[in-house]
Length: 214
Image 1 (cartoon, rainbow, N blue to C red):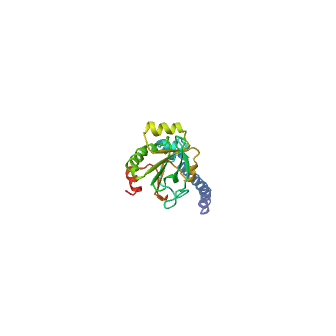
Image 2 (image 1 turned 90 degrees about the horizontal axis):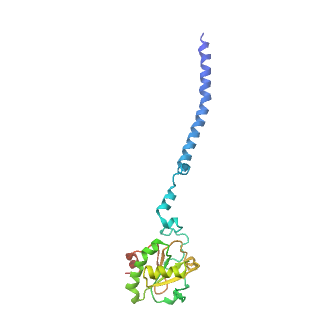
């Protein structure tokens, strides 16, 4: 009679042993599903990814323009302390203007475009700095990136009434020379032709004054 309970227990032990691998596999499957949902849940259920929401909030990004940022150190181009590369571009009257024409004067070289919102915001600040310092020799060269002369003329003179010098970089050759990867980007150059500051993003009045050594 003592052997009967032992025989009765064997099926239960066998069931428990057969269930253990199944439970283990099911647990791994659930972990896998949870991991996939964590990584890709927003895309799977039609919710916008974080990057998409940022693009919608910043029109400049959605239009293909990089938001102004501090340079990461990659492809920075001409650096502070180096001689500014010379270039020659045409102004709106078709005259050839070279950076070297202004040797002996402080020069601000500003890369911009009319479709760039931050560029438009900083233009009045550049105008004010130019008006306050042009009698002492300051020159501002506004290098427009790949836009027709008529567009630049309307934006520069009719809309903002600026009085410094716009230049047409029709093929972005000078922008490439200076490794300009976002707009606006501004180089401050002293009387010897040496770069004293590089600013990526819109400028304020105080920043301009500081870069000019005021």
